[in-house]
Image (cartoon, rainbow, N blue to C red; front, side, top):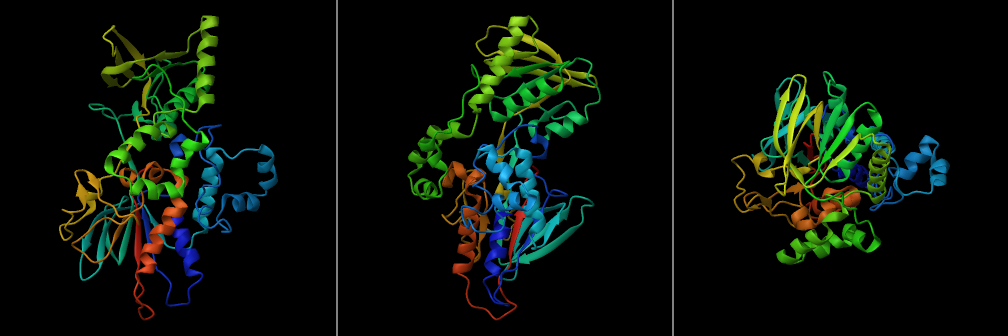
Length: 422
Protein backbone atom coordinates (compact mmCIF):
# COMPACT_ATOMS: atom_id res chain seq x y z
CA UNK A 1 0.00 0.00 0.00
CA UNK A 2 2.79 2.39 0.84
CA UNK A 3 4.42 1.68 -2.51
CA UNK A 4 1.11 2.15 -4.34
CA UNK A 5 0.64 5.54 -2.70
CA UNK A 6 4.23 6.52 -3.55
CA UNK A 7 3.63 5.60 -7.21
CA UNK A 8 0.39 7.57 -7.34
CA UNK A 9 2.00 10.64 -5.81
CA UNK A 10 4.97 10.27 -8.18
CA UNK A 11 2.60 10.13 -11.16
CA UNK A 12 0.88 13.32 -10.08
CA UNK A 13 4.13 15.15 -10.83
CA UNK A 14 4.61 13.54 -14.25
CA UNK A 15 3.06 14.49 -17.56
CA UNK A 16 0.86 12.03 -19.41
CA UNK A 17 2.89 9.35 -21.13
CA UNK A 18 5.66 9.57 -18.54
CA UNK A 19 3.73 8.02 -15.68
CA UNK A 20 4.41 4.64 -14.20
CA UNK A 21 1.87 1.90 -14.61
CA UNK A 22 1.51 -0.71 -11.89
CA UNK A 23 -0.71 -3.58 -10.92
CA UNK A 24 -1.02 -5.16 -7.50
CA UNK A 25 -2.17 -8.66 -6.66
CA UNK A 26 -3.08 -9.94 -3.21
CA UNK A 27 -3.85 -13.49 -2.13
CA UNK A 28 -6.53 -12.30 0.29
CA UNK A 29 -10.06 -11.96 -1.04
CA UNK A 30 -10.45 -8.51 0.45
CA UNK A 31 -8.30 -6.03 2.30
CA UNK A 32 -7.43 -6.89 5.88
CA UNK A 33 -4.64 -6.33 8.36
CA UNK A 34 -4.09 -8.86 11.14
CA UNK A 35 -7.86 -9.38 11.27
CA UNK A 36 -7.55 -12.34 13.59
CA UNK A 37 -5.76 -10.27 16.25
CA UNK A 38 -7.87 -7.10 16.31
CA UNK A 39 -8.54 -7.64 19.99
CA UNK A 40 -10.45 -5.05 22.02
CA UNK A 41 -8.20 -2.50 23.68
CA UNK A 42 -4.95 -3.61 22.04
CA UNK A 43 -2.85 -0.71 20.84
CA UNK A 44 -0.12 -0.13 18.29
CA UNK A 45 3.43 -0.53 19.51
CA UNK A 46 4.81 2.12 17.19
CA UNK A 47 3.89 5.77 16.81
CA UNK A 48 1.04 6.75 14.48
CA UNK A 49 3.62 8.99 12.76
CA UNK A 50 5.10 5.83 11.28
CA UNK A 51 2.09 5.38 9.04
CA UNK A 52 2.07 4.60 5.31
CA UNK A 53 3.53 7.94 4.21
CA UNK A 54 4.50 10.42 6.94
CA UNK A 55 8.17 9.43 7.22
CA UNK A 56 8.46 10.00 3.46
CA UNK A 57 6.02 12.86 2.83
CA UNK A 58 4.39 14.25 5.98
CA UNK A 59 2.18 16.54 3.85
CA UNK A 60 0.62 13.60 1.99
CA UNK A 61 -3.19 13.32 2.13
CA UNK A 62 -2.69 9.65 3.08
CA UNK A 63 -1.40 10.35 6.60
CA UNK A 64 -3.06 8.96 9.70
CA UNK A 65 -3.68 12.54 10.82
CA UNK A 66 -5.60 13.30 7.64
CA UNK A 67 -7.61 10.13 8.18
CA UNK A 68 -8.56 11.39 11.66
CA UNK A 69 -9.44 14.79 10.19
CA UNK A 70 -11.74 13.23 7.57
CA UNK A 71 -13.37 11.06 10.23
CA UNK A 72 -13.99 14.11 12.44
CA UNK A 73 -11.87 12.67 15.26
CA UNK A 74 -8.70 14.75 15.13
CA UNK A 75 -9.45 16.86 18.22
CA UNK A 76 -10.68 13.86 20.15
CA UNK A 77 -7.51 11.91 19.31
CA UNK A 78 -5.33 14.82 20.38
CA UNK A 79 -7.11 14.80 23.73
CA UNK A 80 -6.07 11.18 24.22
CA UNK A 81 -2.46 12.42 24.55
CA UNK A 82 -1.02 9.29 23.00
CA UNK A 83 1.16 8.28 20.07
CA UNK A 84 -0.39 4.80 20.01
CA UNK A 85 -3.89 4.34 18.55
CA UNK A 86 -5.76 1.10 18.99
CA UNK A 87 -5.17 -1.57 16.40
CA UNK A 88 -8.82 -1.40 15.44
CA UNK A 89 -8.45 2.29 14.62
CA UNK A 90 -5.23 1.72 12.70
CA UNK A 91 -7.00 -1.02 10.75
CA UNK A 92 -9.66 1.57 9.96
CA UNK A 93 -6.94 3.91 8.72
CA UNK A 94 -5.40 1.25 6.50
CA UNK A 95 -8.82 0.29 5.10
CA UNK A 96 -9.53 3.96 4.39
CA UNK A 97 -6.19 4.30 2.58
CA UNK A 98 -6.80 1.13 0.57
CA UNK A 99 -10.16 2.46 -0.62
CA UNK A 100 -8.53 5.69 -1.87
CA UNK A 101 -5.81 4.08 -3.99
CA UNK A 102 -6.66 4.23 -7.69
CA UNK A 103 -4.06 1.78 -8.98
CA UNK A 104 -5.58 -1.60 -9.90
CA UNK A 105 -5.55 -4.27 -7.20
CA UNK A 106 -6.63 -7.85 -7.86
CA UNK A 107 -7.65 -9.66 -4.69
CA UNK A 108 -8.02 -13.41 -4.29
CA UNK A 109 -5.00 -13.96 -6.53
CA UNK A 110 -1.75 -15.76 -5.76
CA UNK A 111 1.49 -15.15 -7.68
CA UNK A 112 2.97 -18.59 -8.22
CA UNK A 113 5.92 -18.05 -10.57
CA UNK A 114 8.10 -15.37 -12.15
CA UNK A 115 9.71 -16.06 -15.53
CA UNK A 116 11.90 -14.05 -17.91
CA UNK A 117 10.38 -14.03 -21.38
CA UNK A 118 11.04 -11.77 -24.32
CA UNK A 119 12.95 -9.09 -22.45
CA UNK A 120 10.46 -8.75 -19.61
CA UNK A 121 9.19 -10.55 -16.54
CA UNK A 122 6.14 -12.76 -16.92
CA UNK A 123 4.27 -13.40 -13.68
CA UNK A 124 1.90 -16.36 -13.41
CA UNK A 125 -1.17 -15.64 -11.28
CA UNK A 126 -3.57 -18.19 -9.84
CA UNK A 127 -7.08 -17.46 -8.62
CA UNK A 128 -7.70 -18.74 -5.09
CA UNK A 129 -11.38 -19.07 -6.00
CA UNK A 130 -11.29 -21.41 -9.01
CA UNK A 131 -7.60 -22.13 -9.64
CA UNK A 132 -7.60 -20.46 -13.06
CA UNK A 133 -4.29 -19.00 -14.26
CA UNK A 134 -3.41 -15.76 -15.99
CA UNK A 135 -0.10 -14.11 -16.85
CA UNK A 136 0.97 -10.50 -16.72
CA UNK A 137 4.11 -8.85 -18.05
CA UNK A 138 6.17 -6.32 -16.13
CA UNK A 139 9.51 -4.60 -16.40
CA UNK A 140 10.04 -4.74 -12.62
CA UNK A 141 8.51 -6.97 -9.96
CA UNK A 142 8.13 -6.11 -6.27
CA UNK A 143 7.49 -9.02 -3.92
CA UNK A 144 5.93 -8.39 -0.52
CA UNK A 145 5.48 -12.01 0.45
CA UNK A 146 5.19 -11.40 4.20
CA UNK A 147 5.73 -14.16 6.70
CA UNK A 148 4.40 -17.66 7.21
CA UNK A 149 3.01 -18.69 10.61
CA UNK A 150 5.28 -21.04 12.51
CA UNK A 151 4.04 -24.03 14.49
CA UNK A 152 6.38 -26.25 16.55
CA UNK A 153 7.69 -29.32 14.79
CA UNK A 154 5.13 -32.10 14.69
CA UNK A 155 2.12 -29.87 15.43
CA UNK A 156 -0.67 -30.22 12.88
CA UNK A 157 -3.25 -27.41 12.76
CA UNK A 158 -6.91 -28.26 13.17
CA UNK A 159 -10.22 -26.86 14.37
CA UNK A 160 -8.92 -26.77 17.94
CA UNK A 161 -5.19 -26.28 17.28
CA UNK A 162 -4.27 -23.07 15.47
CA UNK A 163 -1.86 -20.18 15.15
CA UNK A 164 -2.79 -16.93 16.87
CA UNK A 165 -3.07 -14.95 13.61
CA UNK A 166 -6.37 -16.82 13.08
CA UNK A 167 -7.53 -16.36 16.66
CA UNK A 168 -10.91 -14.63 16.32
CA UNK A 169 -12.17 -16.70 13.38
CA UNK A 170 -10.91 -19.93 14.93
CA UNK A 171 -12.56 -19.20 18.27
CA UNK A 172 -15.82 -18.39 16.50
CA UNK A 173 -15.62 -21.77 14.76
CA UNK A 174 -14.98 -23.92 17.83
CA UNK A 175 -17.47 -26.80 17.66
CA UNK A 176 -17.89 -26.98 21.45
CA UNK A 177 -16.23 -26.07 24.76
CA UNK A 178 -16.79 -29.05 27.08
CA UNK A 179 -13.62 -28.53 29.13
CA UNK A 180 -13.87 -24.81 29.84
CA UNK A 181 -10.13 -24.46 29.32
CA UNK A 182 -7.59 -23.02 26.86
CA UNK A 183 -3.83 -23.33 26.41
CA UNK A 184 -1.71 -20.51 24.95
CA UNK A 185 1.83 -21.36 23.86
CA UNK A 186 4.38 -18.58 23.42
CA UNK A 187 6.15 -15.83 25.34
CA UNK A 188 5.83 -12.74 23.13
CA UNK A 189 3.37 -9.86 22.87
CA UNK A 190 0.81 -11.85 20.90
CA UNK A 191 0.86 -14.72 23.40
CA UNK A 192 0.30 -12.35 26.33
CA UNK A 193 -2.49 -10.53 24.49
CA UNK A 194 -4.21 -13.81 23.64
CA UNK A 195 -4.00 -14.98 27.27
CA UNK A 196 -5.50 -11.70 28.49
CA UNK A 197 -8.23 -11.78 25.83
CA UNK A 198 -9.27 -15.34 26.64
CA UNK A 199 -9.22 -14.56 30.35
CA UNK A 200 -11.53 -11.60 29.78
CA UNK A 201 -13.81 -13.09 27.13
CA UNK A 202 -14.40 -16.52 28.69
CA UNK A 203 -15.02 -15.93 32.42
CA UNK A 204 -16.09 -19.57 32.79
CA UNK A 205 -12.80 -20.92 31.42
CA UNK A 206 -9.29 -21.57 32.71
CA UNK A 207 -6.46 -20.09 30.66
CA UNK A 208 -3.14 -21.93 30.74
CA UNK A 209 0.00 -20.19 29.47
CA UNK A 210 3.07 -22.24 28.58
CA UNK A 211 6.47 -20.87 27.62
CA UNK A 212 10.05 -22.07 27.65
CA UNK A 213 11.44 -19.19 29.70
CA UNK A 214 10.91 -18.28 33.36
CA UNK A 215 8.48 -15.47 32.66
CA UNK A 216 7.37 -12.89 30.15
CA UNK A 217 10.20 -10.46 29.32
CA UNK A 218 9.50 -6.75 28.80
CA UNK A 219 9.94 -5.17 25.39
CA UNK A 220 12.70 -2.59 25.15
CA UNK A 221 11.02 0.56 23.83
CA UNK A 222 13.49 3.04 25.27
CA UNK A 223 14.56 5.92 23.00
CA UNK A 224 18.14 4.85 22.31
CA UNK A 225 17.15 1.26 21.55
CA UNK A 226 14.37 2.50 19.26
CA UNK A 227 16.96 4.16 17.06
CA UNK A 228 17.49 0.74 15.52
CA UNK A 229 14.23 1.48 13.65
CA UNK A 230 15.30 4.87 12.27
CA UNK A 231 15.69 5.10 8.47
CA UNK A 232 19.34 6.02 8.92
CA UNK A 233 19.93 2.80 10.84
CA UNK A 234 19.22 0.80 7.69
CA UNK A 235 22.37 2.19 6.07
CA UNK A 236 24.44 1.48 9.19
CA UNK A 237 23.12 -2.06 9.41
CA UNK A 238 23.46 -2.80 5.70
CA UNK A 239 27.12 -1.74 5.58
CA UNK A 240 28.07 -3.56 8.80
CA UNK A 241 30.17 -6.75 8.55
CA UNK A 242 28.24 -10.02 9.02
CA UNK A 243 29.37 -10.59 12.61
CA UNK A 244 28.25 -7.08 13.64
CA UNK A 245 24.91 -7.56 11.90
CA UNK A 246 24.27 -10.66 14.01
CA UNK A 247 25.38 -8.88 17.18
CA UNK A 248 22.98 -6.00 16.51
CA UNK A 249 20.11 -8.41 15.91
CA UNK A 250 20.93 -10.20 19.15
CA UNK A 251 21.37 -6.97 21.13
CA UNK A 252 18.06 -5.47 20.02
CA UNK A 253 15.93 -8.56 19.47
CA UNK A 254 13.72 -7.71 22.43
CA UNK A 255 12.67 -4.40 20.96
CA UNK A 256 10.11 -6.44 19.04
CA UNK A 257 10.44 -10.24 19.33
CA UNK A 258 9.69 -12.58 22.24
CA UNK A 259 8.95 -9.56 24.41
CA UNK A 260 5.83 -8.06 25.95
CA UNK A 261 4.69 -4.56 26.82
CA UNK A 262 5.59 -4.00 30.48
CA UNK A 263 2.09 -2.81 31.40
CA UNK A 264 0.56 -6.00 30.03
CA UNK A 265 3.03 -8.13 31.99
CA UNK A 266 2.04 -6.30 35.19
CA UNK A 267 -1.65 -6.71 34.35
CA UNK A 268 -1.34 -10.48 33.89
CA UNK A 269 0.73 -10.82 37.07
CA UNK A 270 -1.90 -8.87 39.06
CA UNK A 271 -4.62 -11.16 37.73
CA UNK A 272 -2.70 -14.26 38.72
CA UNK A 273 -1.85 -12.84 42.15
CA UNK A 274 -5.43 -11.75 42.81
CA UNK A 275 -6.71 -15.21 41.95
CA UNK A 276 -4.18 -16.74 44.33
CA UNK A 277 -5.44 -14.55 47.16
CA UNK A 278 -9.02 -15.64 46.47
CA UNK A 279 -8.19 -19.30 45.99
CA UNK A 280 -9.79 -19.30 42.53
CA UNK A 281 -7.28 -20.07 39.79
CA UNK A 282 -8.23 -19.30 36.19
CA UNK A 283 -4.94 -17.93 34.86
CA UNK A 284 -2.32 -20.63 35.26
CA UNK A 285 1.25 -20.03 34.10
CA UNK A 286 3.45 -23.04 33.26
CA UNK A 287 6.97 -21.64 33.10
CA UNK A 288 10.00 -23.41 31.62
CA UNK A 289 7.78 -25.94 29.87
CA UNK A 290 7.39 -27.42 26.42
CA UNK A 291 4.85 -29.62 24.68
CA UNK A 292 5.71 -33.30 24.97
CA UNK A 293 2.54 -34.68 23.39
CA UNK A 294 -0.56 -33.21 21.77
CA UNK A 295 -3.61 -35.03 20.49
CA UNK A 296 -6.65 -33.31 19.01
CA UNK A 297 -10.02 -35.02 19.11
CA UNK A 298 -13.56 -33.99 18.21
CA UNK A 299 -14.30 -32.84 21.77
CA UNK A 300 -11.01 -31.29 22.79
CA UNK A 301 -7.22 -31.44 22.88
CA UNK A 302 -5.11 -33.53 25.24
CA UNK A 303 -1.74 -31.89 25.89
CA UNK A 304 1.17 -33.07 27.99
CA UNK A 305 3.45 -30.26 29.16
CA UNK A 306 6.95 -31.31 30.14
CA UNK A 307 9.12 -29.36 32.55
CA UNK A 308 12.31 -28.59 30.64
CA UNK A 309 14.35 -29.24 33.78
CA UNK A 310 13.06 -32.83 33.87
CA UNK A 311 11.00 -32.14 36.98
CA UNK A 312 7.91 -33.92 35.77
CA UNK A 313 5.01 -33.28 33.43
CA UNK A 314 1.33 -32.34 33.51
CA UNK A 315 -1.52 -33.39 31.25
CA UNK A 316 -4.25 -30.90 30.33
CA UNK A 317 -7.62 -31.39 28.68
CA UNK A 318 -8.44 -28.15 26.86
CA UNK A 319 -10.92 -26.89 24.31
CA UNK A 320 -8.27 -25.27 22.11
CA UNK A 321 -4.53 -24.67 21.89
CA UNK A 322 -3.37 -21.33 20.52
CA UNK A 323 0.21 -21.17 19.27
CA UNK A 324 1.60 -17.63 19.36
CA UNK A 325 4.88 -18.87 17.97
CA UNK A 326 5.76 -16.25 15.40
CA UNK A 327 6.39 -16.17 11.67
CA UNK A 328 9.20 -16.91 9.25
CA UNK A 329 9.88 -15.08 5.97
CA UNK A 330 8.48 -16.62 2.81
CA UNK A 331 10.95 -18.44 0.57
CA UNK A 332 11.46 -16.20 -2.46
CA UNK A 333 13.31 -18.94 -4.36
CA UNK A 334 10.09 -20.87 -4.83
CA UNK A 335 8.74 -18.09 -7.05
CA UNK A 336 11.62 -18.01 -9.54
CA UNK A 337 10.90 -20.02 -12.66
CA UNK A 338 13.52 -22.06 -14.53
CA UNK A 339 14.16 -19.18 -16.94
CA UNK A 340 15.69 -17.13 -14.09
CA UNK A 341 19.05 -18.29 -12.78
CA UNK A 342 18.99 -17.59 -9.04
CA UNK A 343 22.14 -19.56 -8.23
CA UNK A 344 24.01 -16.39 -7.27
CA UNK A 345 21.01 -14.76 -5.57
CA UNK A 346 20.96 -16.67 -2.29
CA UNK A 347 23.33 -17.48 0.52
CA UNK A 348 21.85 -20.70 1.81
CA UNK A 349 18.21 -19.88 2.54
CA UNK A 350 18.78 -16.11 2.64
CA UNK A 351 18.36 -13.86 -0.39
CA UNK A 352 21.28 -11.61 -1.32
CA UNK A 353 19.76 -8.15 -1.50
CA UNK A 354 21.22 -4.84 -2.63
CA UNK A 355 20.77 -1.69 -0.55
CA UNK A 356 17.84 -0.57 -2.75
CA UNK A 357 16.06 -3.88 -1.95
CA UNK A 358 16.63 -5.53 -5.31
CA UNK A 359 17.44 -9.21 -5.37
CA UNK A 360 20.91 -9.82 -6.79
CA UNK A 361 20.16 -11.32 -10.19
CA UNK A 362 22.87 -11.76 -12.81
CA UNK A 363 20.80 -13.70 -15.30
CA UNK A 364 18.36 -10.91 -16.30
CA UNK A 365 18.86 -7.17 -16.91
CA UNK A 366 15.79 -5.98 -14.99
CA UNK A 367 15.05 -6.19 -11.30
CA UNK A 368 13.01 -8.01 -8.68
CA UNK A 369 12.64 -6.07 -5.43
CA UNK A 370 11.93 -7.58 -2.02
CA UNK A 371 9.51 -5.44 -0.02
CA UNK A 372 10.16 -7.26 3.25
CA UNK A 373 11.91 -10.47 4.25
CA UNK A 374 15.29 -8.72 4.39
CA UNK A 375 15.87 -8.51 8.12
CA UNK A 376 19.23 -10.27 7.76
CA UNK A 377 20.52 -7.59 5.38
CA UNK A 378 18.58 -4.42 6.28
CA UNK A 379 17.90 -4.88 9.99
CA UNK A 380 14.99 -5.30 12.38
CA UNK A 381 12.97 -2.45 10.88
CA UNK A 382 12.49 -4.33 7.60
CA UNK A 383 9.76 -6.57 9.03
CA UNK A 384 7.82 -3.79 10.75
CA UNK A 385 5.72 -0.77 9.90
CA UNK A 386 8.42 1.64 11.08
CA UNK A 387 10.15 2.01 7.72
CA UNK A 388 7.51 1.15 5.11
CA UNK A 389 7.20 4.70 3.79
CA UNK A 390 10.94 5.22 3.37
CA UNK A 391 11.45 1.73 1.93
CA UNK A 392 8.73 2.37 -0.67
CA UNK A 393 10.55 5.58 -1.63
CA UNK A 394 13.85 3.68 -1.94
CA UNK A 395 12.31 1.08 -4.25
CA UNK A 396 10.52 3.67 -6.36
CA UNK A 397 13.70 5.73 -6.66
CA UNK A 398 15.62 2.65 -7.81
CA UNK A 399 13.02 2.10 -10.54
CA UNK A 400 12.71 5.68 -11.75
CA UNK A 401 16.26 7.04 -11.42
CA UNK A 402 17.61 4.40 -13.78
CA UNK A 403 14.68 4.36 -16.15
CA UNK A 404 15.71 5.33 -19.70
CA UNK A 405 13.68 7.79 -21.74
CA UNK A 406 11.02 6.03 -23.74
CA UNK A 407 8.27 7.17 -26.07
CA UNK A 408 4.86 7.68 -24.52
CA UNK A 409 3.08 4.39 -23.98
CA UNK A 410 6.25 2.33 -23.38
CA UNK A 411 6.87 3.26 -19.78
CA UNK A 412 8.00 0.37 -17.58
CA UNK A 413 5.33 -1.39 -15.55
CA UNK A 414 6.18 -2.62 -12.06
CA UNK A 415 4.00 -5.40 -10.73
CA UNK A 416 3.65 -5.55 -6.96
CA UNK A 417 2.89 -8.92 -5.47
CA UNK A 418 1.69 -9.45 -1.95
CA UNK A 419 1.20 -13.08 -1.00
CA UNK A 420 1.16 -12.74 2.79
CA UNK A 421 -1.79 -14.88 4.07
CA UNK A 422 -2.20 -12.56 7.04
